[in-house]
Image 1 (cartoon, rainbow, N blue to C red):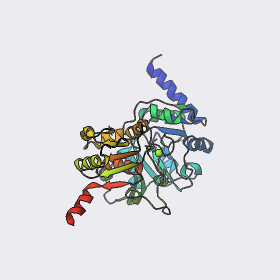
Image 2 (cartoon, helix red, strand yellow):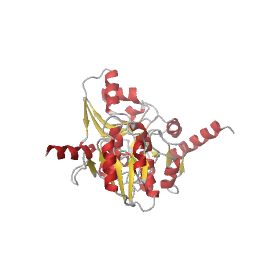
Image 3 (cartoon, protein in one colour):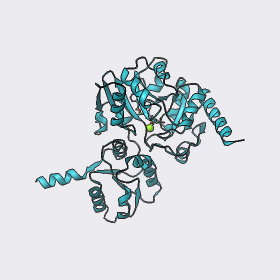
Image 4 (cartoon, helix red, strand yellow):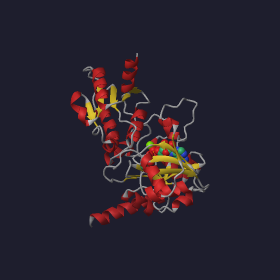
Length: 355
Ligand code: TXA
Ligand code: MG
């Protein structure tokens, strides 16, 4: 039997499992997902259970053809249609008013639903084989970094799901860009490898010139206990290794120096750094060159998980990229992993000089 035949049999089997109410971990181009039939509330409940996910955090619904967007959403503004045309299939989730046949459990009772058409060939083939829209959160246990490889997915979900499909390493490494779309206005709820620049370029290529793009408040700071985030997932501690993380923003040479000063040779401190500074530290994991945000995105979750395997790590100090381009997504995940415990290195210095 050829590999292609074997792969297509496995894809059909995964699709059948989802169609018949099972839950299956699947590779996507962002991170691995844990899929269930989005129209079957019992199957979706099993995903909440397997992940240990809080019930007020909605799932993204994954499709394999653009026309499914209007089958699931009762209103698709021109901006959303334009972005679907230009950027799908790909790592972009559109949050739109939902149709009522989508079970409440999928949307956590919200009147909107997040829809995504992934580009990963295995993900698309499994969704197609299932014949249904597939609700899929990231395939990590709740609170842990999302999984970007079969090994990490297996580590978190083995014994809790009906199957795990091996599709190699996820390409992007961070989850999809999530935006809510209204006529004339787009709100960025979660940054990803599709950047604000990509979105505004796609809109203008489709002839839409007047559309404001708002950065949600939850991306800039930790929300207070009584504030309700627009994307419920943003209020939870996330992506976190076991040891507490502090993120350092500012020019890379300065943050490296500051981290070295704070470590002072202490054994229990570990460092997440850019490749260029790896040799400055003893217990360090590097996650890409300082100017290569795509590489940082690809490696970040794997790097965060590595600290859990290191002996005696009590504190992690991390170099954080700037908010430009894909850096916004990397910095967002890192700041969340740090519970917004951020040291702005350049700023401290500026204040010092002004005195
Ligand atoms: O790349 C991805 O998006 C991956 C892969 C598997 O597709 N999925 C993923 O799902 O990251 P999850 O459940 O881990 O994150 C979904 C995020 C959460 O923060 C959730 O609160 C938000 O999207 N979200 C989902 N539906 C929403 C809605 N209707 N309104 C606002 N936010 C929503
Ligand atoms: Mg997640």
